[in-house]
Image (cartoon, rainbow, N blue to C red; front, top):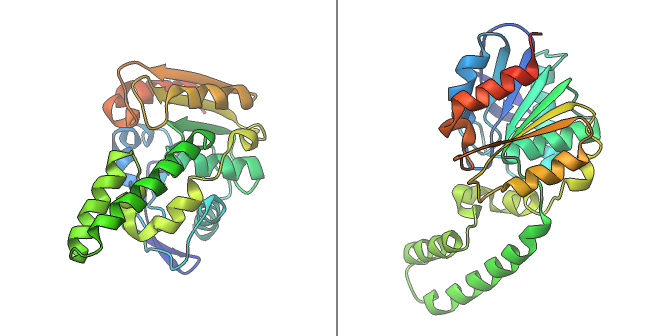
Length: 252
């Protein structure tokens, strides 16, 4: 299904009935990332999942976004569909950062919050940014005379070698730069919702140290570490994630 939010066509799904659950995917991903857990949650809840602008089946914005703009899209999505009360937001990676930004600012409101491998700790990114700029600058020098397609391939390898997600959605590079400079550690202390944080022990993209930082900041929070799981813990360990979420959400 589709709905127009801020002049953009937003793709979404809705299944089940009961208290409203909103699923927000991470960078370069789509609503399909939640399929393993959505199928279980929709047995007790009305589950909405949307493709954020520039990803999945949703239109790409003409200007660069930041977290506030993504929050505005989620808020506008709720308004367009007449959703007045959200029981919980469930955000993965950058989707978790969007949910935290919205709840800490009061633009979004929910009784509970589930953060899965959430990003938002940006202080450690400073070194990566410097490495990224240096690597790109170095790579450009010897490739200037090569065909553009070859330059693009080499640039992609350089970004990949230092762990950058910038080229996951190349048409969203400026948005990516905005998003990865927004640190949410301080903001997270303003989140009023009961919060469950789920991180994978083997996650190198958003390590469990992130979860520990957010858990200290968010007053009513619980951190769960899933053994043997990576950044996509909700897919590789979906049964355990569903168990943790179901217990946290209760029988409402």
